[in-house]
Amino acid sequence: MRQPEVAGRLAALALALLLAAPVAPPVASLVLSAAFLAEFLTDGALPALSAVTPAPGRAALGPSVDRWIGAALGEAPPLVLVHGYAPTGKDDPRLAHAAQLLARAGFDVVVPTLAGLTRGRLRPDDAAPVVQALAARPGPWAIVSISIGAAPAFAAAAEPSVRDRVRVLLALGPHASAAETLRFWVTGVFQYDGVSGRVAHDPALVRAFLEANADLLDAPTRAALAADDTARVERALAELPASTRALLERLSPERAMPHVRAQVILVHGYGDPAVPYTESLRLAAARPARTQVTLLHTVGHVEAAPHSVWRAGLDGIRLLLVFHALRRAD
Image 1 (cartoon, rainbow, N blue to C red):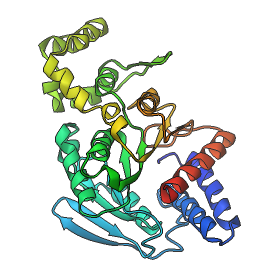
Image 2: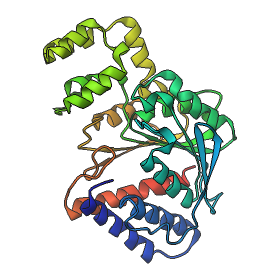
Image 3: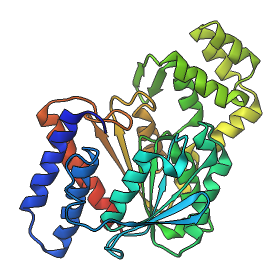
Image 4: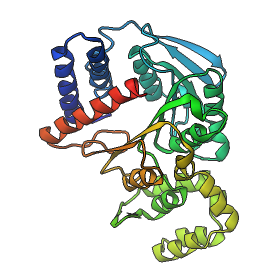
């Protein structure tokens, strides 16, 4: 997260909990959770976890998969970290930093590169590296997905051959419906269960997405986008070919959600400009049992958003409980 003021407030709260906590085993996990948040939310400016844990090792499990191994193995489940849009995949600096901190906190972290998402092009075969990671060991596993990495993460967690190995799935800023997310990306409009809004997107980002996913849009949709005619875009999206609608359905985590047996934790910012928070609500509705939704005021998409100290404190507590649940889920 990039906003130093908000991140500092959240980190200060986490560090206070770290310093005040006793050393009983259940609380030791909470201490590590607080230290992780303190360092992660400040991009390392407050190295609460690094100060008390040895540096993890990094090993290549192949040309496109890394494993990060800390000294406190066995205190948390093995974990697959599933990136969103990341041009350098597993070597993305922020992704590698998160993997390193997770390893310091006791997770045995596997980070595969999802080739499609290095180009911003989401497709069903992106789930294969996640399934392969889960199949390599019996688990129980944790999965953490970022943004549109939710599609391969949920598909893998629902795969019959490995779904019983997944104990908990934490999704940060996920989408539920690929069709609704496509609509949001090209029009800025979102709507679900009586909640609606509109976001002004950067035209350059919209163009980049469209170029990477040109096969999702037929000629009428591209023409409507070129004319900057929202009404025409809406009509064209409603009339997409059946083959495109079927592909979008396969890329929708809400389709996989009823087949996921793990505990699911969804974390989303109210002000997320990339994927609206209503998508987490939509996803939770697909399988309410053993699903927790945490909505935050102080988070945008994958960065902090400015808010009051009071808001930051409440969100800090919520994030601490989320990370503690990731470590202790059963």
